[in-house]
Amino acid sequence: MSAGRRSNLLDIGIMARCWVKDLLCEENQAEEPEATWTISTKNLNIVDMHSTFSPQPFTSEDHITCTVVLNKTTFTNKSSLKQKFNYCPYVVTQAVYKLTIDKSYGIDNATVSKTNVYVPSQFFHISPKLQDVNSVRREMKLEMVWSTDCDVEVPPNKSIEATLTVLQKLYSARFTVKTRMSGKVGIMDQNDVTRHYEIGIVDLIKYEMAKNRLNVKEFDFTMDDDVVYFTTYGNCGFEYYADKV
Image (cartoon, rainbow, N blue to C red; front, side):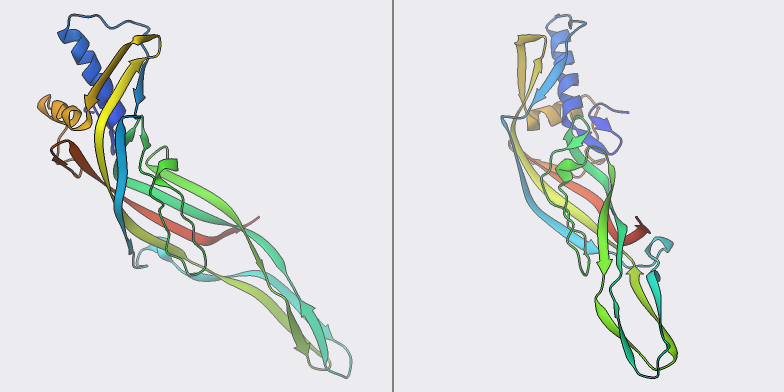
């Protein structure tokens, strides 16, 4: 695994730590065994420029749609006149939200993009931030309430069955987020505040490329003077009925 890369995340924190270690070696300074390098982003400007979302066709087995009966109640009228019965079931289920990042960038294995990832859905708008994802995959369960309140008219000496059904369906989309980054990455030894270093984000990336520790083709980014543009790719999905609680 090359420096600066963990799984499919371009990790700026790893790159900065490698750069400091190389710098200390070049200056003939031994790295303290107890050194704990902390990354600072206070001088790093991060701006999410734009994002795109493309709904995916429901073609695979993961996108099977089916009708699920949540409640079934039988009303019986034993009289000689029509009767109305009130039908008001209340059912709680779990919905599942899934977010997968194919390629991205971040610091210490966490994305830094603040973009909200919207999942296409007819009824709900779930939109967690990419910044909240501390790995390349996240699954979140949400409780949902299903109910109705209606009258069921039953003929004399008859029975009628009322049901509450829901369409189990997975909505999914591909997404991309383009982010502009400029400024400097700071790195400091927590055990010695006098040991503090800074390097421009573009200079850091160029340094890693010169050391053959970073292949520009592996991740989608471009550089322009002191600015670098990253693109995050991923997939999001929302299944609004999963299991009864």
